Image (tube, rainbow, N blue to C red):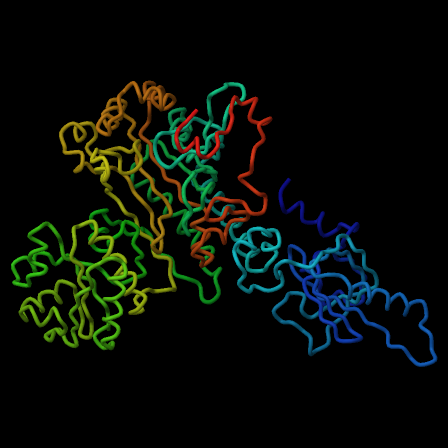
Length: 630
């Protein structure tokens, strides 16, 4: 049954209501109607009690008149009933659920609320049925004031009644429906993949589920449907998608939830990297354009198609990050060559020892007071850095500051030209080994973007990051490991794996980034069996181990595999951006807190020995677990 066919059932129901709280109109004046919902607000004006009744769809103002006594005159039956109703409503707590009936009438001119669809009419109450009385509330519902997150999560059902939260959760539903419609229109078919599956040695920690029937063995909740969607391509379903639940036992961040999250998971067969990227950027461009006006104020601009593509190496150089916020107009540049033989000893010696120097422009900062530069220097030191040198350029031919006094005017001009400065700008310098220089210069760029007002707030700025390194060296072990998805196709195929230094191999991987948030990683998959074996061998995986740890995908690789690839943009991150939030818990109905606890349901919870016994499990105390004892 379609949703459109369900709507009349709600409108015509007469058990609790004859219409919804958003539907009352002045044209109904004189009609008798019944409404149901929660008591959102009450305003007592002595002989008048105004009540805002709220349901899922909207708010209607109801009114009760308390008859005034006249000396020597007793109330008649109608007046006594009206006084009783007034007292009953007066005693009811906010958020009590009621079904009320009465007569529609026009609001007085001074009480018309133009911000509500029902704002020119009200319901004069004649009866009240209390469906569920509410106790005093542990947190306010009828306003959006800040409240401690632990209380909000413990009483999430109340938190979700607040207008701002309802708006964001309903946005999430609409976004998912929009994405689903766009994927279907693009020729994709929705499939559901297993929730109980095998543990994977790659990625984050798995959530494990013990098997009762196979004692001593465990299922794992899927970190992503990666292998299953590849198997669907091998099975011949050429365009797959689903709104997929994923489970990862990892620490919480503002843009990542511990436990579970959802993603728009999709895969395409017989498709090039360009074709895959074109499909998903068109879908995301459409969805972001559809909901770009969700936040208060003017509608935000969405990057024009096609989205810009930036190589991983170029992104790390220009932005210090592989998820750059392109709303920030500041671009980093490398100036190591200019300082190498410059005579500026501090930088020259560091460069000779293998360091690099990155320069970060600060638009318009030359006019700022000395305290601006001193505070940035103190901030850098608070992060464990040696400091943050700078040159201020009131004009491009006049560099000022500590560094400027120790270099030639020619070098000062060359630095300004390399960084593409304008008169009135300043230039900050980071000198360190490459990875540290990238990381710190990204932080400086972000801080200067805010301080110099270089971040455009009126847009969703998309880009693709491409050409990721296939491998990297593990910082602890020194061994070669996969940088990203191990099933990715290396550029150059098997010959690249055989002939190139692993650290020079580039993968057909691509990330889509919006406003500095990585929405998705994706890749072309390695569909050649020999090449895939070789790729894993470089990372230290023996062929026999692969057959054991990835039996499904490696078995299927022998029986005809089409070229294929895909990606999986995160639902929470998409909605978070559209809602103008920085924390995905704000766009999730029932999230875990930062320590992975569900404060509402009390999860994770203690399991009794009786429940563990059929699983062949028992718990060790903490001390024995720490020692690894049996």
